[in-house]
Length: 100
Image (cartoon, rainbow, N blue to C red; front, side, top):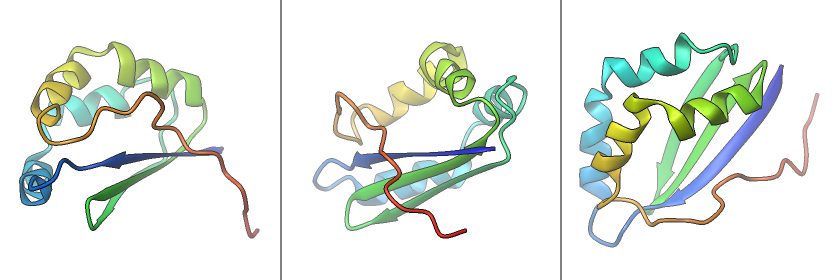
């Protein structure tokens, strides 16, 4: 099992919109992740002061990234999120420490 994480920033004044949209994440989006061959075990999203941290435990990180880049459900969700989050060139984070 591998652990991967990403960081996003919320546009100024869009924090409440971000939280509201996550109260009803589309079932199609969740299914795209859960039904993929990535072996998704855990997916959590945290937010504080306009900074979003996403954490996943997956068997195949490349497969989950493919879902994020190629699925119609993710494209639909991205259209919802586009006015809310800042467009980042590289959202993926490096793991620098792990306590086992």
